[in-house]
Image (tube, rainbow, N blue to C red; front, side):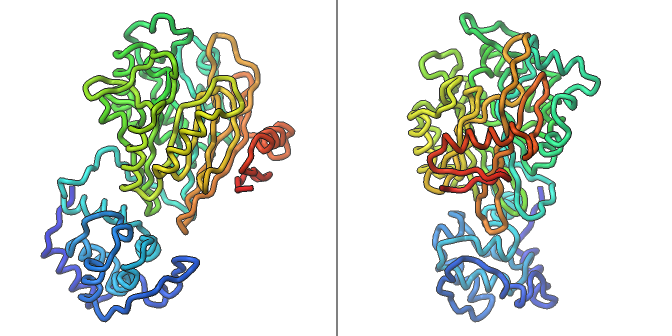
Length: 459
């Protein structure tokens, strides 16, 4: 980990004063911060800029972080006097977007870099992933529904008999989409284990050899959810094997853990100058208790049937990230209509700070709605999934896609797909199935509209 003293930062500031660095005043003039320009503070010099930020900033403006002279020294050294003085002129303004617009990094990312540089012990670096990917405009995040590599099911058997394995199980354009997304999240609907015994009395139990975890990376996954009702199919030992397998493969996961502290912990991704939090929990089972809930000392999943604890996780994520994406496992299997229970949970998540909600579990598509300005994909259903040795009939599916624009706005999209005979394919807009899926989702939605390009807007 890099270390940096006040003396080194001070020297950097002196160099920047002499040579200049960062954006020019002309470039700063081009920054479009908000639709309505806030009242500006007149800044005299660098000292005045620092004093103004330290003494005038609202908590929201500094992201709730305890910034100090050393932090401001880092920003000044990296981006120049003009930039820090421009930031200071907004220091009594509630929105912290100025930090991103002038440095290309949000206040949460700058604070992360500062803590990493100084080795600040109070800061948690756990489950924070800095992605070395170049973003061109929007940050694109794709989400899939249920995926299983479990032994003894039709899709796994099909894959094992293909010349190119998993690559023959998705259309070329869909694979390209998944692998090119800045972040791809998959619902890992099974356990990785070759130990333990299937839970007695449970109709369907799924496990895969731990070696199959590499398939997630092959698909382009950056993170998986294990907050579902099948990760515990082979009891505690199966869950622990799953978590260990994912950890050894360096595949980030959310929604389960060796105890409640780990199970509820958000995952953070830093990319394109933004810090994005992803959290996951399961409402299922609602009446049974095959899948154990994590406790202070016992492994299990994060549950949200009663959402208070999970809402605390969302609030924690909101305090430490620019955007919070919530991935719940909820609803009623086989029901294409979302229920009042999902709506109530969605309301709790939105009020806690969710910026988008992407659900799963029902094994069929449910529609998209807006709650306030938050897009809610109620269920993505199955993506590449079967339950028995018999190949399932053709079913509709798709990718939920979230764009985070350079202006800090969220745009949502749906990419229609179809599973057929072991292969999930992206549909062309000219396909009848494409139009049928879009029309069906639009017909069920009260608040959202999906256009022919897959873009979703409020009605």
